[in-house]
Length: 222
Image 1: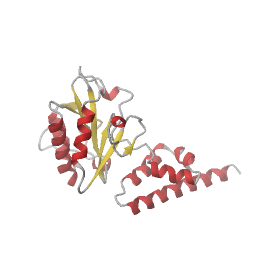
Image 2: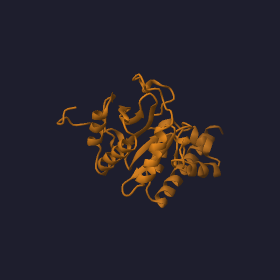
Image 3: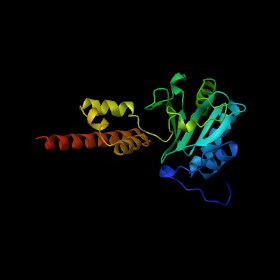
Image 4: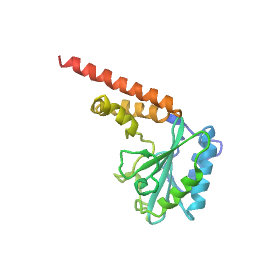
C-alpha cells in the first residue's frame, strides 16, 4: 500500500484493508487505526509476534488475523467505537476463559478499552491459543469461505447480564425476534459502555425497547 494513500475508516473507526497475507498488510491496518487504538495495535502485534515465533499473519474481513502455519488461525482483532475487540477463535479452550461470549460456541472475546489492560494475561492466552489447532491454513486456503470462521466484527451474542435482565422481565424472546441489525446495534451500545453505571443504563434502555416492541405486538393481536 502506498504510504500516501488514505485508508477509509469503516463503522466504529475500523480501517478498510483488502484481504491479503503477510506482515505488511497487518502493519498497514495498524498504521491506520485511529487515536489511542494505534499504539495498542502496535503492542498487540508485538506481544503476539514475541509469544509465537514465525506467526502467520494476514487480513480477513478488514481485521488482522494471526495463525500458525499448518494449524490455522487462532486470533483476530477489530476496531469498534470505544474498544478493540480481540477474537480468540478457540477461546472456549483457554484458561481462564476470555470474558466475552460469542454466538459461536468455541469463540471468546477480550475487549480492550482506552487505558491500562492486562498484557500479561493476554500473552498467556496467545501462547495457549497458538498451541490449539484452528482452521487448516497450511496450503494458504481461504479461511474466509469456511462456514465456521467467525467475523471478528460481529457482536451478535447477547451478554450474560443483558440476557438475565431481559429474562427477568419475560422479554428475552421478544429481543431475540427483533431485526438482526437493531439487535446488534443495541448489544453493541451495551458492550461499548466503560462504566458499570453506563452499562446498567444502556441495559435498561434495551429492556425498555423490548417492552415497547412487545406491547406493540400485543396491540396488533387485539
